[in-house]
Amino acid sequence: MSITAPPETPGIKSTTKDPRKLGPFRTLSGIPHAGLIAVLIVVIVFAGVETDSFATSVNLVNVLRQVSVVAVLAAGLTLLMTAGGMDFSMGSNAAVTTAVAAQFLAHGRSTTFTVVVSLLLATAIGLVNGLVVTYTNVAPFVATLATATLLDGVALLVLNGLSVSIGEHLSALGAEKTLGLPNLLIVALLVLVVVGLIMKFTVFGRDAFAIGGNEQVARLSGINVNWQKLVLYGLAGALSGLAGLMLLSRLGASSPGTGGLQLQLTAVASVVIGGTMLAGGYGTIIGTCLGVVLLGVVANALNLLQVSSYFQQISVGAVLLIAAIANQLHKKTSPH
Image (cartoon, rainbow, N blue to C red; front, side, top):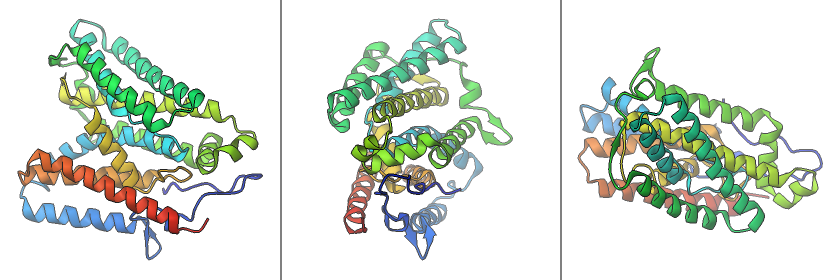
């Protein structure tokens, strides 16, 4: 199922570009995301040839677990960016959620209580971002980057600079499988499918495309833009919390530096590589999935090849920069 922009809404002049001409790796010979798929295949073949352990079931399952956390963040970010928004604090939100949940579990709170409170906290953080962006007209990038810096500090305070273990709590989510698939992957796939269906078949999804295409026209057409933005940022916060819990379940502990900017940049890079427009108006869950997998495979291949972790960070930044430039060039050259 390919998630593309919906048909033109009556009364609104469509500002959505032709998806065949949008974003890096968009379409080759009429096949959506053919370029991105080709790059992914090349990377997989190279990794399989250069390392004996890449194609093993243990390694592939490990890759799927790792990318699942990024996929949940990227799903929420895809929907938000489609509406012209941006949240650079999602990784830091996940870090705070991980720290708070770890402290709760370490001090005897029940798993159910911990999960509910952590998700509510993450959603509240997202709503605060939405309120700031919507009612102060501060640029989303500036507002959420400031929030990210604040949240990174809060996470360190909650942990007091120490690693907090959760023992066997959440192990069913982080370590076990269902029908041969890691439970983390199943959760990520469910989130991606739900977000994809929202974008494709709901009024809420159509309104997100309209807002991203032209916010002023969307207002004039009767769309409650402010309410829509609040819901979008709240949803982004909730998914950040879910990603934080998933990360905690996989690692079994929360430590200083867990989540944060590096996780956020990987999610942003995945979404942009997948072709979602930075300026809004177009988004694709399938492209996001391919971007997530590509970055996950690249990171895993670099680890197996014993490439320094510094170069891994360089690779993510370089890919994000190239994708952003290509995205902008396509925006300028595509017909309006």
